[in-house]
Length: 155
Image (cartoon, rainbow, N blue to C red; front, side, top):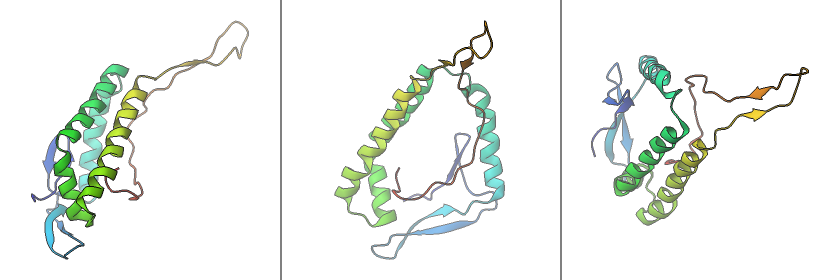
């Protein structure tokens, strides 16, 4: 398997300082590839790229956002076996289980949120001052960093 890279600004990159870590197949203890051991410089690169992309992304229409997410789901689905193979090596999970329990829910979640992108709405919040109607409008505010639990690797 090819070494894993950071995906930053559409480019697959090594860690800024070149450090890597071995990825080990738990079923046999063998190293099957390496991944970047990313640090602060990599986070800064990713944040900068995301902040630049945000300038145009925040103005996209709901249909454009939906299409972007559907394209991601379609690309994953087209390469589903590649994802299954990588996950089997990474977790030792049986191929059939990975195929049935990892890929379909992942695709379903992405497609669910693609549909939700079409449901962006504003709400009338009533009159807080006589003769004025308040309106709640949701807008993207910027880039965030997030550390998520690793409960289910492909999700």
